Image (tube, rainbow, N blue to C red; front, side):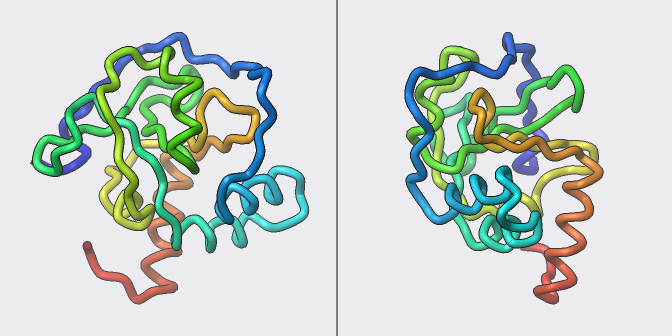
Length: 155
């Protein structure tokens, strides 16, 4: 079975939360995300940083590679999406939205991207103001761009 074929589709009470704590960048990836959101850098610059980064991906299984199941849920506007976080500490405040999550691991973003099936969207930092939502169609464009730039074959 493929990485994304063991889907957990749930319907958490998804909403953007207003945290009392300020979002302070913990990595270059988070700085790039803040710059993109504030329009001081391009989407392409953010993507360049993202494809060279590790991200935290929550799971509704134990962190064993053969049993790993990423957190996938139904977003009210985007449909099925996978949730990832720019830093592991970003998951803790929103974990109550996802009661079935048992663990999570840091993974190279290109591996995640290249294993996402058609139609699956992505939310980076769900529940945080500093977040980005990516449609399934845009994910396919990202895959094509990544493959073209890197003469990339299937991982």
